Length: 336
Image (cartoon, rainbow, N blue to C red; front, top):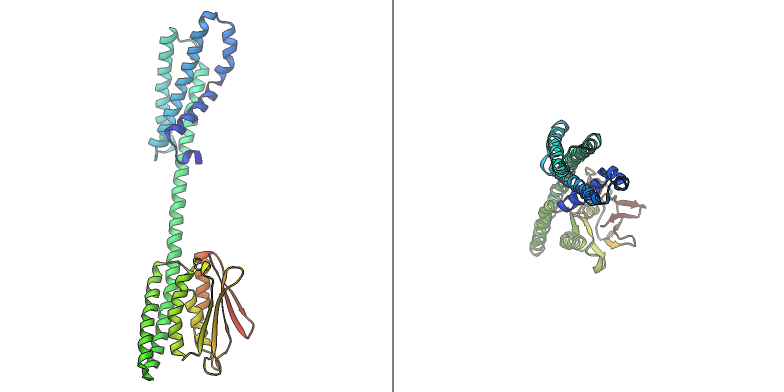
């Protein structure tokens, strides 16, 4: 169907030239035999007759294909057949008239010529109808694909929006603790970085995939907040080559991982936390941290990692990997 996908007059003419050869093939096969039994003085007249027949079928096929492909777009098969039959009948009458004027008689316009016109009629009707059904089917597929994309975007937005309230309340708790300690400078710095973080989060609903550079810049702002909050007992070790910063990752992929580290681990003087973010040989972003489980497990809804995995499946058709050996917790995020 690709040849009909972006049809043009030139393409239709080429199709018509080739198709007309098949239509007049019986005449081509009989031409040498007919010339054998004709006087040489009539050879030129007979050959001209043959080429006029061929040219007539070329024009007829081109006209019927153009009409069926470009003009008739929403008719039923019956309506298409009736219109095409009327045009073919008029063309047959015109052909008979031309040949009568040329030869002075109506000889040779019987079953063979009728069959040739009938074949042209059938071929043009079916080509036009099949092309119309193809266009209808393609349009439906495009609409389905558009709906699928919109549905995926809605689901991704819903998953991303689940992050915002969770992070918001945790940040307010951290800010409240700083205010109670009356650490004015740290509080102001915390509020400044918090605004940067929230700006990135609020803009995330307009993004699906972001560059690794954008995500790591967000982590830098978030990193400062965590270091202020935990008095440098939480450190980040980021090892990513500059030439890899253009790789893509779902927006807000690192926030739930870092948030989980803070929620589920004890972070104090005896348990300093070092979060490592690096790229492995498979071009996966590896986020790992030592495990210091809290004596009293935190009460959470457990949707953080599942949320993240769902977004990777929706946006990249890939799954994350999680490893927990009891000492180190590692998450592997595929990049694009």
